[in-house]
Length: 294
Length: 308
Image (cartoon, rainbow over all chains, first blue to last red; front, side):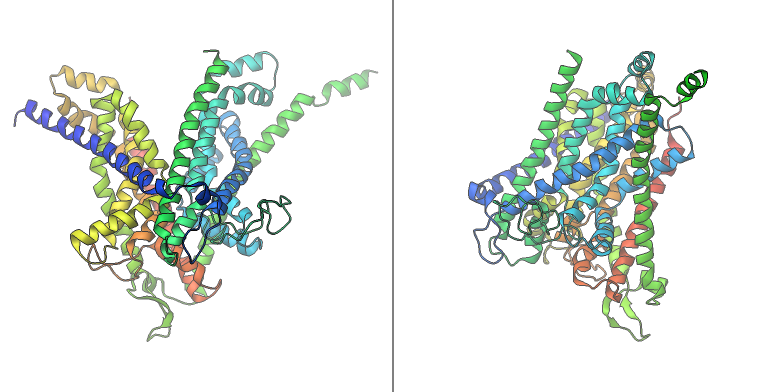
């Protein structure tokens, strides 16, 4: 076969493969949205789930997902920021740093079931938190930390060294340079990383089955005292999230309209993740423009 | 007077105190992550080993036994905890999905970097990012409602099984492998391509004989990474694989993986019981495999870094 012909065949094949991938995504998204849209309504998004009769909603699960997301971020962001700052600004090239990097890599590649089981063992059983939002938030923190730390570290590394030199030349200490100059300069990128990891947390289920639990007790949305058991803000109540709900009703198979509910819930999940993605792009670009006067 | 001035000058300044505090706190945050990793490894290992130490199950029997039935004791007076069906299931779906995903992922990556970088950046980059973003339960649900009936219609059987698991995992690891392959291809220096083209090679010859060879270590890392992801994926696989702890006899017979047995089992057993310990041993196998995948990635990385 002459080289020109094989060149043409190969390149055509590559075109076919690339379009297949686009087709797969289009089919997936199309299927999720089209099969899920009929189920979506205000009633569906706000009313509680029903286990044995049809017509339930996903209100509590949706609230749980957001609450868990916020709690997880509140716990994991300060830790990831500190770790990212130390890794990029202070860490020397020695065996301690390489040990740290290895551990972060290991944590990021651990199966989320294993992280969930560890959370179950430590928080649910040993610390006796029970199946609760708090246990779930800690498990998700472990799951979230490595990626968030890495994205913050990369964001800091992208800030040019002139900025650091400028800060030090003005007589600022290293820490002051970092907190007043480097972190603000890296903020657009950091925020993008945070929002993207929020999307990941929002859809995670395997780490939550044994930590935040698989039940969603009724909530009283008029009671905002975090110490009351039926209050939505109580962090010690079991909280099934949207992703766990989809898994559970499909594996139990007792809910008569499980398929319709899952279609609707999947559409809500995917639309939320899409929204997180778009938001990350938009905010990143907007902040970058504002900070650089571009 | 002099000594007062001396004291003031020798005292640590406010800025220096804040500096130390800031450095200390950020170091603590970092150590917290390291501590977590060690805690996970130690706790899961100690729980996982109790099957062998307190329930006296033979390790070899555990790894090679074909019957998984922790409630039943066998002729030797030991519980039947043969994990081979799950281990086989995990490896078969992982390898098959990696085999299926590799050509697609590498093809797409080549398209994105070599053939049409513009369309790559504008269309395929967001496509892969979105595919990564779709939650695994949604993949599982689509597997359940689309892939399983399709497999049932084409190959017969119940539709649940290794084949459905493979298809679902294929779509799930595809974006990961693709985006890492893109990075590998990007790291091949531009003058490699220019040199090949200057020698009269066609575009495909340049890609196949030069670029791909130079990027091989990076590609291998990408594939191993995808395999690690497939091996550890739980819910999506659990929803379509059929959950029968039997050695798979065909690609369309119900099977199970380490992760699927864990997700369905842990909630139904009592902490500290034999049945529960056996599940923790499965978690230990999972952990060890994850560490091995990590090790392989490091070895490849050390061998094959492009030296200029």
